[in-house]
Length: 108
Image 1: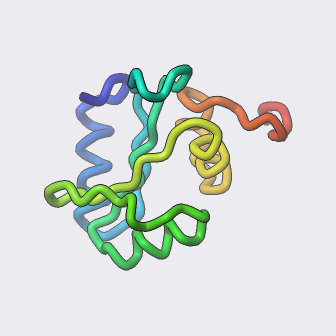
Image 2 (image 1 turned 90 degrees about the horizontal axis):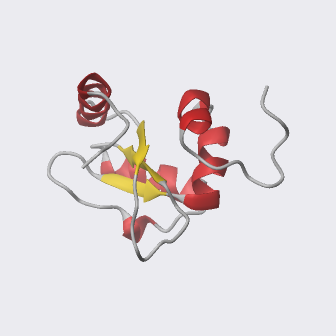
């Protein structure tokens, strides 16, 4: 269940993924195996080769792509989540959900 996103945001993410664009959706998330982490970003794209290239370009192993229905995606969280959201210019998602990397300059 995605908490902290509207139906419209989820629908827009699904549309972008289905149309072969790299799409980002960050939502609140708690898991007992990952203490201290409060959000996850799903980076999706129906073009699996494009998603694999995206993962590799960020140093992420492509074998962790979730092949779910029509919405293949990669889950990122923690420090890597903040770094990637910043690299990708996803400022609203970064401000709202993700922790700041220790070496990141103050908010703009």
